[in-house]
Length: 133
Image 1 (cartoon, rainbow, N blue to C red):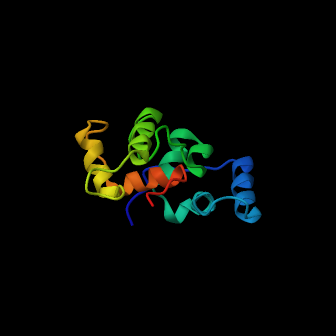
Image 2: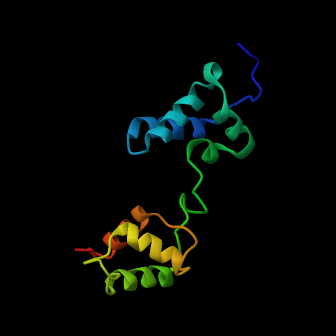
């Protein structure tokens, strides 16, 4: 076993808080797991111990909130409005209706966005309760 890099000494209040988190069952699984790790740190050590040593018990028990969304949206409401307007317009000559692939090609051709997938267009239309039929 490698030597401990961080030494954790929980105060009585911190130990009580961690034990309460485990007993209540009202916290996420990751929070409960981290509380258990802190209580058993003499045997298990690791990242949670370093977080506690550097930033305190709240940093060790709870996840940090994301600042940015996991996936950036394709564009603003203006882009969505232009795609919806195109989907509601008359289909190309020789076609009875728009398909998602046709919309994808036309959106890129009209420089509404640089790239977009047909799945993204489908989700956008579904979000606004629109159908191509």
